[in-house]
Length: 545
Image (cartoon, rainbow, N blue to C red; front, side, top):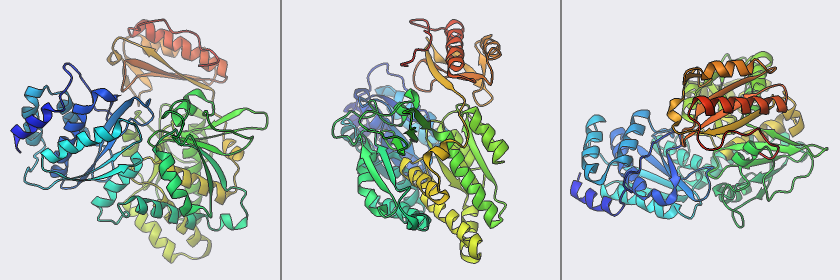
């Protein structure tokens, strides 16, 4: 390792003095102009991780659903999963090191992680459509090359596509071909195979409107839709030619504002969905004949998928272990429906997709979705082999069910939540079951809920337990929440510190929207009072929030 050369190059990507960052579930995210040094250093770190694991590592330049002026970076581990927690700590140390300490920090990482510096390294890079992404990706490349790493720059990709590329390369192509074309082919072949019976009987379920958040999803879906055009007609909106990325559109906007995106005309009962800026989240929605907006979020997506999987497992008579993983944000009605009606076990983890992904890996088939629409279906290797074997051996209806399961395995992105893959799984299930979007929505009725945030001086004064459903500190806060919850029917509320900014997130649900809004406001006031609120005191919820 040529430390002098690293120092020389590092000076060209100088760290702003005093800037402190934390690598979280989303990697690093902030205003793009402050990220040059981080990108260079994550190029260095990716090379060390590649050497240590003797595998291809991914680097994705994106800030997902954040505003266009932000950017970010995250590393992708060998099987397409999130960076290991111990390496998140290395990432934080390296990003925060002052220039004069860079060499020491790098040597410490090599020592702690037992990195063989003689080992070859290979990195793959992807980026979203932000104007800052190309230059920042070049800074990553500078970091890779100064440490002697080899790389392939895929250019514009969705985040899940980069996860897919890493997984393909580290399984010697067994998972799929590590090209954009390979991704299109794998998913579309499974979709066409899965839906061929459903689509032979007319086109009632074939049309879908997609809000692409003015992001990368538009470019990829435009290229890909020709591959499955006989099964599904996709109309694209907010494709990036006019509007700003994630501005008044995209999955996060639709979910948090509970209204349709700008730039999309919706007729009653039309099926619509929104991706986020890097296409790793998806939510569905429609307007009913009275003009009311109905959101179908990650909870209902998980319910649709897991219910269908349960039916197929019953059909083939295999006792594979199916589980659904949620967070505290999952609507109480979804949990009750899954456990009591579908008899599918539900588990709750801390917020953050890495926690859900990890828990889902404990099952033969694990379905995980955050309410925000980020999720996928994971099949264990043993379950995948068994299902694909049964698809060859069984007869008649059982064989048909096993083949459907085998196609869902190929259609699901096993490496990460993927809006395109999830969309195709959902569309296939709706077609096969003959469900309209209204019938899907009617599986259960969401309890009205409200999410708010409270600005605080230091978010770390809030500590939680029980998958973030109980506040341990500050003293008295959980007791105050418990007392407020008792005032409302079918109610619950929890608070948790944001992973990215000095705010505390508040969630409340109750039997009516008025009660949910009131409970959320009262809990916000308790947080403001007991957890060091700053700025204006929380105001009652208004209609246009």
